[in-house]
Length: 232
Ligand code: SAM
Image (cartoon, rainbow, N blue to C red; front, top):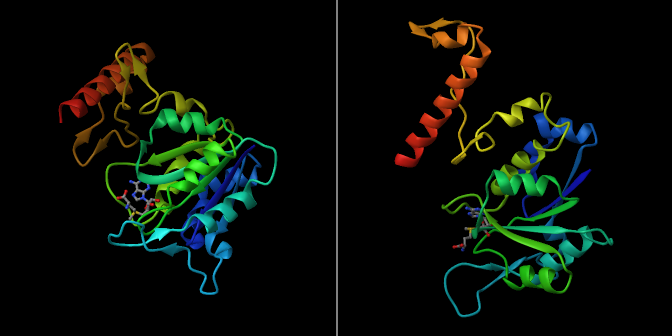
């Protein structure tokens, strides 16, 4: 079972992880998701978790010690841990990364706020605790905090775990998993009933029942859509 621990100053932000596919995956015991409040580990009477940046500049930086205490608490065993630190300065998240996370045992997500987390936190867990530390971005833009990015990564990762999706076949034919000789493709367009909607017809081939020809059409369409994206 994949154990996911998420540390944030806004635990309520992560409530949607109880719903839908991820809620069911937890009920079935395929994953566990525990959400931890960073503020519980604040070391001063005001429960502050941030301070002014060394070297000056705008904004506040999240202090290392509350993070250290929170991560120590969720990793107090001999198991292997992967620490995912959300940051727009990290490696870009993609389907391959989701696949590799889905095979791990323990993922700890560190959701930053303000100007981010003191850089020594990543260094400490990589060097002193032998964690695999991944600094990960979900795209080239800046969010207010790491919670939404965590939800993106958790959802993309969890649905790749065997048993989480009702029909595992859906995983084989979807965007970024479909491939041809040149690499990965996005999915072909999908249609459902009725065959005519407001004067727009479903492509005839899909009504033919000829599975070989449908397969060829789908691959062509996937290639066309992928090429169109790379031209943009
Ligand atoms: N000062 C940081 C910088 O310029 O790289 C941005 C900090 S951002 C306002 C606050 C937090 O939001 C970050 O510490 C991170 O946890 C999260 N965050 C923002 N954008 C993100 C992105 N694209 N991917 C992942 N996390 C992001």
